Image 1 (cartoon, rainbow, N blue to C red):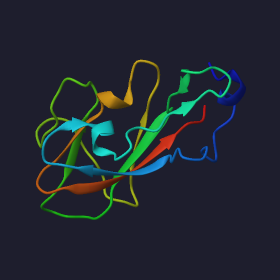
Image 2: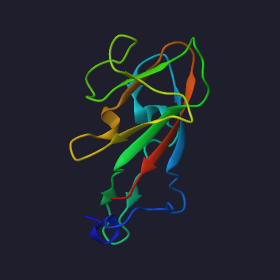
Image 3: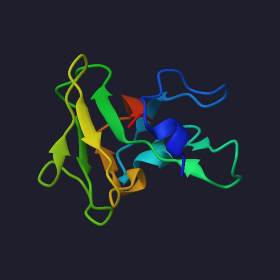
Length: 128
């Protein structure tokens, strides 16, 4: 279970596994991973095939401010976010950090843009 790596934060990702991604959030609600071109990053244990390290948290922020377009999110994987349900993402340089303890999986994070496609910067923390 990555005990040799989990003790310290991961400052540099392995080749081919970017931890900073750009999500193109649409006006139809879907999970976070579906809005990221290569999906949610995962790092495989080089010693044990099929054992992947999960992100410990994700930081999300809207790239460009727009009064007409907001991004909303829910965390339970069941509720559809909207202007009347869920949390509103802030605009960079502010961001929302969502810890991901056991039981909260990143694909349970549902996002929706209120109008056009909105770009959201995502940073996945892989450290402990």
